[in-house]
Amino acid sequence: MNQPIRWGILGTGIIARKFAEALRDVPDAHLQAVASRNLDTALAFGRDFDVASCHGSYQALADDPQIDVVYIATPHPMHAANVRMCLEADKPVLCEKPFTMNAREARAVVALARERKLFLMEAMWSRFLPGIVEARRLIDDGIIGTPQNVLADFGFVANVAADHRLVNSALGGGALLDLGIYPLSMAAHFLGPIAAATAMAELGATGVDEQTAFTLRHSAGGLSSCLCSFRATTPGQITISGPLGHVRIARPFNRAEHLTIALQGADVRTVALPPTGNGYPHEIIEVGRCLRGGLLESPVISLDQTVALLDCMDAMRAQFGLRYPADQ
Image 1: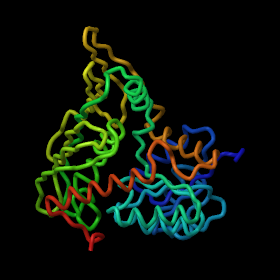
Image 2: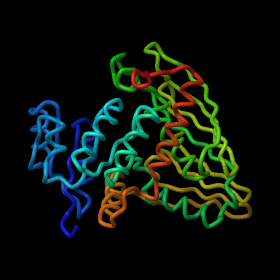
Image 3: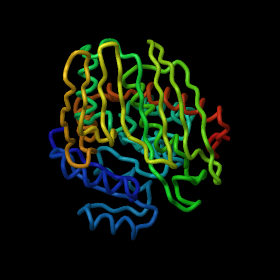
Image 4: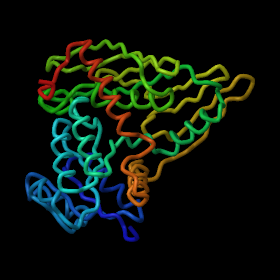
């Protein structure tokens, strides 16, 4: 591909708008098309972002021959069907997190992508931020010794109605799926595959978890302690510790704008690593790199790891009794 990569966005909500804004900051990417189940909504989005093709159905976007890759920004329970639709139309896909509602759905779409030899990736955008990349480089270089534990939290107060997607079971609501995926993913990123997970949650009136705490034991050694909450404004940090000190990614860690490095016998230092734009351009750049290089998945967040993390969330939900319609 010598020309800009042409993107289609499936969905027109808040996160779709953030992604459209980010595309403006990536020189070799172009927003070609958008789709909504309502044509008027797609047209309004198209006017705001100068989109050439506005579709009144998701299938029409999947079938659009002018698109090189699709970003899926629909509600969680729609992800599996939307990914399948796009793959069956021979489109590479970047799918918003959580990738699917459960590991069973994830395995099915991953198998389809591999069968059709198409690129597929979960949109875990924080993995590609300069601050996260630098933290991983420092830790891989041994700055804190062999990392032994990760502390990570993500929480805010969600004052929303019972039918809001954050707390609506039919829309995949709940703190673990919406927020917990961040500390879970980061724990695996810094300490490796997860061997076991123990979780406790407080469920709200709508039946979904409003806050969940979980502890992870990692296969290569090390423990992680994580928290996600719709009831509390938490520090929003990640701390990776080893025998020689720790690296802390400050609030909000999902933007990773600052790293604090505290080592034994040395002054604490802070490094500023601001992301490009709203932070989303970095995952767009990664998708472009993979497509241009003929890769079918990103080595930074492999499909096997995406499935493994959903297996972990399935196991944790089972511990506190949360099931969704997709689990039936």
